[in-house]
Image 1 (tube, rainbow, N blue to C red):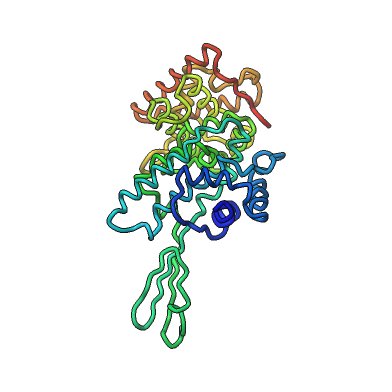
Image 2: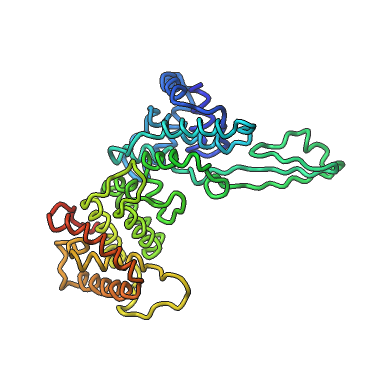
Length: 386
């Protein structure tokens, strides 16, 4: 059992290839896998470790090959069971009851809690880094007597035989698991538990829609300096305004205690850290990004909210309520860098004045909560890493 799961599911999950989805794996089956992991086939286990090491080295240069431990087996089995839920073979009059059992097993397996260190976060991510690439290939075979559809399966030779005589045409559609197929609603809690257990992928995807970005899940990653720097770089690659708006909207949910349970609690110190991370992104953009728009610039005429508006409201409110949330103590306001950042803050203030009153009030509420940590000295200082 361990030999098959490592070679036919875990290894292609990391390295790419066809994933074999079989019977659901509950906690007892994973416990058997853990006991048998030492007898996994000689080639698959080392290949899996090497493939995960290549992923981990992108984040921690001297990372050791991640072990084939209980967390690995549980996270891999969670993904396997989530795929079982959309498998065409899971059908029949009792499908709802069977889906409920599989979803409950997936949630139990995924409930590992947040990673305790940067190494643990990277090790878990090394297994799940390619989740967004999982896709199902559906084939429809058209021939002279009709058609047959094969969901997630390669058409057998008997169906495609004599292609000229039988006028065979095969139409292939590749559908993304997460974007096109989706996870059934019944497994929502399992997906959230998986995000808590392995938050690095979420932190690197600020524009995600489902489940939406959640500060309570990504905070353990951002608080690790080595990973926080990588995530900050990814945010600037996406674009300060787009990524910043996503983070600011998520911060409002976090500070309003609307995040699902299981992640980091929304303490004043946590909210202050989140605001400081947003300010850190702006400092990096001032140092290395494009020139900001002039303060008081006229708003765009397109319909809908202006990009960067939510970020501007949040940081403008923080700068007014507690400047320590956005200003590093070791950067002079009179220097070239300080003046450039002050100009950016003025632009944010001008943009924030154009936002709707409820949005401004919400941003002030977040800043007020964070200010209690900043004024007490419990908030972590901002550092600019070059």
